[in-house]
Image (cartoon, rainbow, N blue to C red):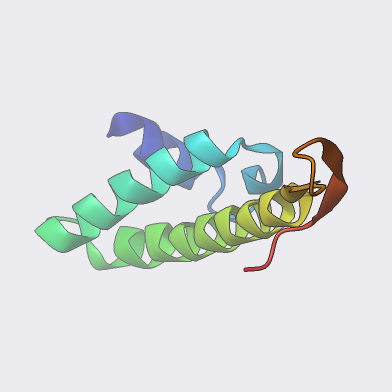
Length: 92
């Protein structure tokens, strides 16, 4: 939990400064930590605002990465004989 605090303080002027370079897994883990801290309610007001803003940036980043991954997923198509014929975009 100290990691989030130091990242928030380091990025106080820009809570989204390093978010765009994060992997999905790392961003999601930090977002979960922020949510837990906010739900506990033991964070001071100023820090709550800062980590909430960072959480919003992390959420948007995760959403963007998920949309990119969904766009890459393809459905394999097969001919009547069962042989692979190609691929087409996966229907959501």
